[in-house]
Amino acid sequence: MRPVFVYGTLSSPQVVETLLGRPLSVESFPPAILDGHSRHPVKGFVFPAMISNPTKQVNGLLIEDLTPKELELFDWFESDEYIRKVVEVRTKNQKSVEAFAYIWNPDLMEMLLLDQEWSFENFCKENKELYLKNTVTPCRKEMESLGMTISRET
Image (cartoon, rainbow, N blue to C red; front, side, top):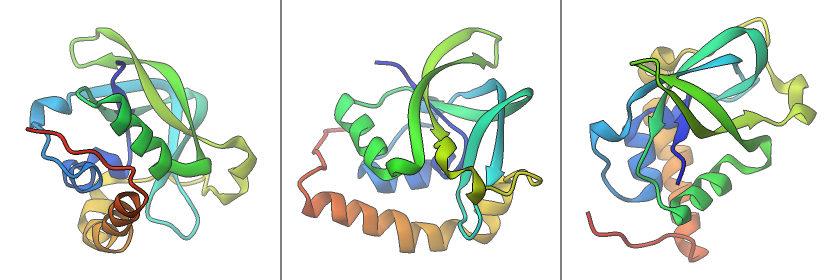
């Protein structure tokens, strides 16, 4: 299965591990770059949106060891605000890799602060703990109540 290019809140291993309910190795998150896109804050939220932008690039990470069921969990978590697409990213050694990425729904562009760039560092310092407590953990519990989660030996 293709890896997933993450560029926002899912760049935090703690967020992904809480969402999936299993630990991940640091090696599962190699850095990558997606050309032709930019990352922006969403008004009133702590997560970003990524949109097509031919003159920009987005730094992110690849999550390489997801199962098809875990990809379905990501789809549910990202909801209708994002569209999962196949993109081509560059790894640290300039290797080109096809990956899935969640691109902002173009019908919701008015929600973006296009004059600003979203910062992962600021998210980690200012919002990550509350995001884990108020968003990710409740989402995990809702997925469990809906029977969406899976058990996986690690």
